[in-house]
Image (cartoon, rainbow, N blue to C red):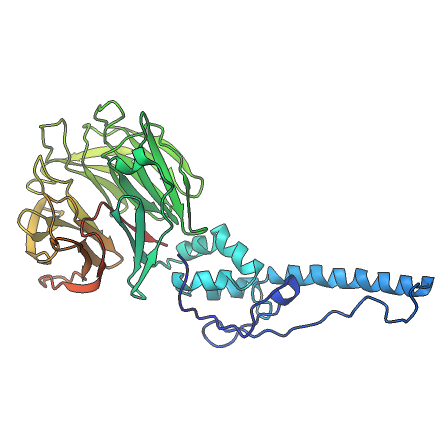
Amino acid sequence: MLVGQSCLISRALPSSCEQESKWSYMTNHILEKSSNKRLHDVVSAGHSEVMDKDQWRQNKSAKLTDSSTSKSDCRDSDNLISAIGRDNSISCMMWCSRSDYGVLASLNHGFRSFIRSGELYRRRRKNKITEHWVYFSCNVNEWEAYDPYRARWINLPKMPPNECFMCSDKESLAVGTELLVFGKEVNAHIVLRYTILTNSWSPGIAMNSPRCLFGSASSGDKAIVAGGSDAFGAILSSAELYNSETQTWTTLPSMNKPRKMCSGVFMDEKFYVIGGMASNTELLTCGEEFDPEKGTWRVIPNMSLGLNGASGAPPLVAVVNNELYAAHYAHQEIRKYDKENNVWITLGKLPERPVSMNGWGLAFRACGEQLIVIGGPRALGGGVIELHSWIPKEGEPPEWNMIARKQSGSFVYNCAVMGC
C-alpha cells in the first residue's frame, strides 16, 4: 500500500548494514547521499599457501576489527539519518506524507523497523499530525484506499478467502493504523484486521460480546461500538471500547435502550449512537450520548427523527469540526444538526449522480475537514465509483466537487476513514 513518489531521493540504495548508516539529511525535505566504504581485505596477499603465525594473527585481528566496525554501523542505522541523530530524523519523518513511508521503509533496516513499530504514527498523533484516507469495498473480498492529498488510489491485498465470511453482512471500522472488518462464519462472528504497518490481513480480536449491525466510531487509537445483534438475533444494549495499541476490548456501561442498525459518531469528545431499530419493526428516533469521563449514557429524544425509515440503511451521519451532518437518501438532501434546539436543518442537495437502494450502497463520511459522498450512477455491464467532496462553511450552501472517479463496482459495501 505504501508506494509512490517520495521526498527521499537515493543515489544508491544500501545493500548492507554498513551502507545503511550512510544516509544524511539535506534541505527542508529529506534527501540522501551515500558514501560507500570498503573494508580492508582480510585475506593475506602472500604467495605462500601456508600462513605463518604472524600472518594468521594479523588477519584474525583485522577480522575482529571489521566485525566491530560492522556492528557499529548497524547501531548507527538506529539513528536513521546519522548526520542529524534519531530525534531530529523522527521529527522530519513526522511531517512527510503517509504516501512516502513505503519508500522510507525501503532505505535501510532502521527506517523499516521504526515505521513498522508504529512509533512514527504515535508521534504524529501526539503532535496532532493527521492525514485521512478513505478505505472502501465495492467487491466482496477486495478493498482499496484513496489518498485525497496526493489524489492516489491504493489497492489493498485481497482478504483471506473465507466463503461464509464473504457472503455475510459486514461492518467496518478504522481505528489507529488498523482497518477492522466484522462478519460471520457458520456459527460465530469473526474479525479480520488489516494494518498499514505491514500492509497485510490477519485474524482480529473478537469483542467480549460479538455482534453485527452495531453503531461505531473511532477517535485516535480508540473506538467504541454499541448495540447491534448477537449470533442468535437478540438486540443488544451493550457497548465496548477497543484500544488498537493493545488490541483489547473493554466492556462499557450499557445504553438505556437496546438497538441495532444504528450509527455512531464522536462529537465534542463524546460518543453518540443515533437511530436504529428496537425490533424488526420498531424504528427508534432517539439517540444516546456517552460521556467517557463519567461513564454514563444520556437519552436524546428525537435526535434522528426523519433521517431514515424502517426498511432503509442506518442513518448516514458524519462529523466535521464537531458539527453533525446527515445525508437524507430519500430526499437527496444534506442536513445539519442544531445541537441547541435538537433539530435538523436542510442545507441543500446531495450530489446527483451517486444512487442508493434505500441508503444501501452509498457512503457518507467525514474526511478531515471535508464531507465525502461515495457511490456511483446506475449502469449495466460495468460500473463507476465516484468521490464527491464538500468543505462545509457557515452560511454557505453545499457545492460538491467530484475529486475522484474510476472503473469499479458502483455499490459501496463498506467504507471507513483512517486518520493517522
